[in-house]
Image (cartoon, rainbow, N blue to C red; front, side, top):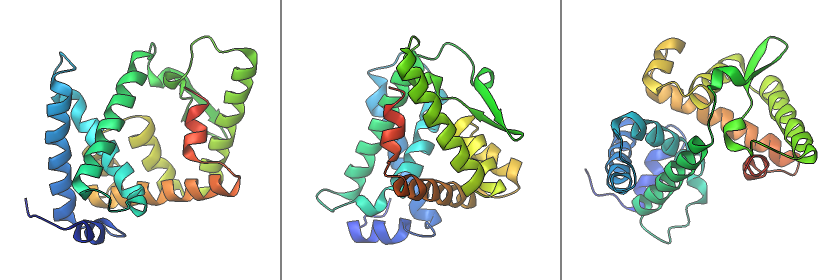
Length: 207
């Protein structure tokens, strides 16, 4: 892998991500997660690491403007990947039903209620708060995203479809799909910000 400065990484991964740099970062995260998780899990890492790497890449690209250069970019990126993996592993411990069974519907659109992140026995107050948050996010998805963005978010972020499969489903390529989802997340984040909220505020309701 080519040795790059922090500035070079930022330039190559901002706006339209460079394919070579993206694949190099992907390989770096893959190796790092396999090393970190091998001592924690007694399972086939191939089955889960790819999902964690995909989610980590999306998060890194989405948060790249927050990188302050206080460490190597690759170190910062690897820390995000480990955080993503450990958070998802905690969430999976709570999963007791398939995602397909957690759908709700609004104007013909299907969405998934993030019950895998929530207390299985919430109080009436918590249940009401979560219902309101779900309705808010669903409304934003319907009203603010294009049909193609909604489809991409549903396939990859909600149904967990591998990027290669989702790209084929949408008739596009992997990098274009990254950009599509990135733009959708930026749009949702902006709209949440206009309402005085952050994505972390949304997730905290379900923890």
